[in-house]
Every structure is written in C-alpha cells, then in structure tokens.
Length: 179
Image (cartoon, rainbow, N blue to C red; front, side, top):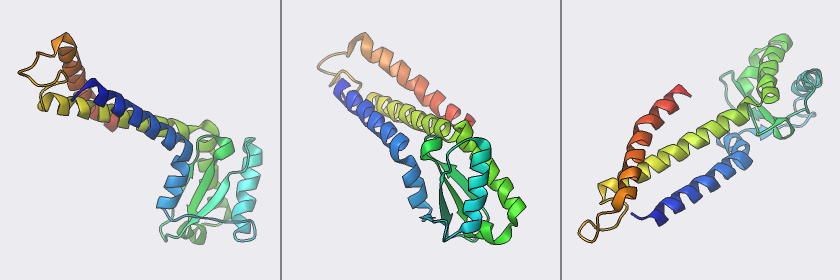
C-alpha cells in the first residue's frame, strides 16, 4: 500500500528477470526431466549436431534427451555459447537421419538467431508488467497508495499511478496474447 511496496515489487521483478536470464535454461530442462547425453550415449545425435553446428558457425550446444514418447525437440539457453538442445526419445526412435537433421537444423537456427533469448526477455518483461499492474490494482482496491483515506488524499501522484495501473492492467494481457 505504499511506494515501498512498489519498490519491493520492482526489485523482485528485477531479481526474477535476472534469474530467468541466467538460469532459465536449467529450469526448463529440469521441468522436462531431460538428461544430458554424452557422445558415447547418443553418437548419432552428437554427430548430427556437431556437423550442423560447424556448418552454422556456432559452438556445439549441450545435448539432452527427454524421456517422452511424443516426437518433439526444443532449444534453450541465452546465447550460442550457453545453448542446449533437447530431443525426446520418441523423436529419436521415429526419425531417420535426414529428418532428424531437419529438426536439429531448425533448433540450431533458433540458437544462432538468439530467438530463445528474445522470447525469454519478452516473457519476463510481460510478467513484470503484469506484476506491476496487479500491484496498482490491489493498491487502488485497498485504499490507494497514499495510506488510509481518512488521513490524507494521496495527492496527484496517487491519481497518476492509478491511471498508469489501469492502462497496464488493460494493455498487459493484450500484449501477452500478441507475443
């Protein structure tokens, strides 16, 4: 209910943003139960990725296998030097070498173009905007930012923050859906 709360919310959003930038790939991989595989564990996969990474001019990413039957793959990491590619066991079982090269090439394009970083940053920023708009909404609901209503009005700052909060409350979900 005070500007101190907003500062705390912004600090929390900043720490969460930094954490998702720095450790988001590990969180995603852990949530899918992916396990890192060595060249001895998955020689065909490593061979394909190494060849395509050389052709793309990027470092070979770390490789993971997700214990799922559905065919799928994804890339994660903040830049080519910290990238990982995960494929499901179902994908490895169903695709021949040429098809697997196509899927891996697609994922390596995400790594080379830094699409993953952009998506992570955008999602984090939208989350921060939603947190801030929620703070404003709750602040207005429970008596504004200026303290108790019978003590003082809150002044023009309270009105400006209320309008800003309403705008964020309306715009944030729309931008989230667009992204």
